[in-house]
Image 1 (cartoon, rainbow, N blue to C red):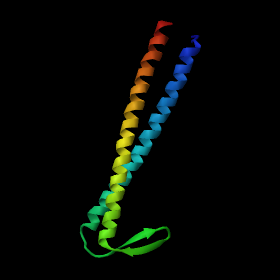
Image 2 (cartoon, one colour):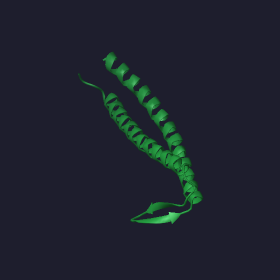
Image 3 (tube, rainbow, N blue to C red):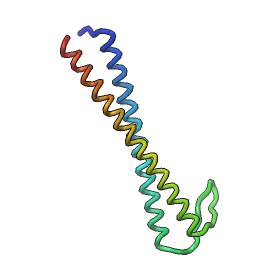
Image 4 (tube, rainbow, N blue to C red):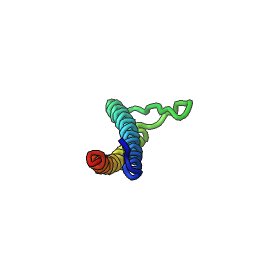
Length: 111
């Protein structure tokens, strides 16, 4: 089947959108895993009031319970902000992709 240039370009654009969407989903999954690890660390930290060690690079540094808890809360807030931003990007890409897919299918059917 012979397609016009416009349809071919839309198919290429659709492939780029799908690739971008897949990339966002992979990043989102990584942040969700990091969020889970952070929440688990906060939960474990809640079981003690003693000072704990934090790994910084290749060394462990003793830090107060409060400092570590603050660091973990800040990290959690940042991850949640990133996840919220990614959800917006994901929705936008999915909407654009769906719209373009319908256009391409309509063009192909009309040929």
